[in-house]
Length: 119
Image (cartoon, rainbow, N blue to C red):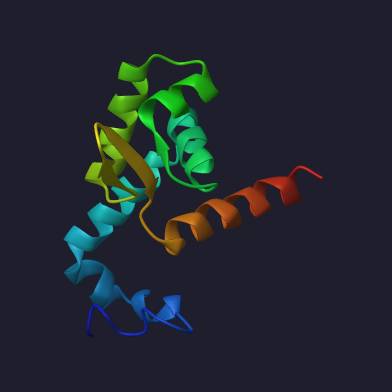
């Protein structure tokens, strides 16, 4: 089964829910686990939610969250490593933004789930 099979448009998750795929794609399963582990940290979630509104530099994010810039930078490094955020240099400032719409969709769906179960 091709890794890119059905990744755009109507994504059929059940095509990956086979014993063969699960047992032969250990690296992909590991990467998926690392991806979701990022969402277990409240500070990283806050940073990503801020970035949903647009590009921000470390200082802006730190100010919004009342955190040290070094703390925010550490979290952004993790988010960059896992390709959840991207950077663009403008002069002496580096501006961060969400990598792509899929990251925003994960946040949106997770928040909808939490709000629904907490009604």
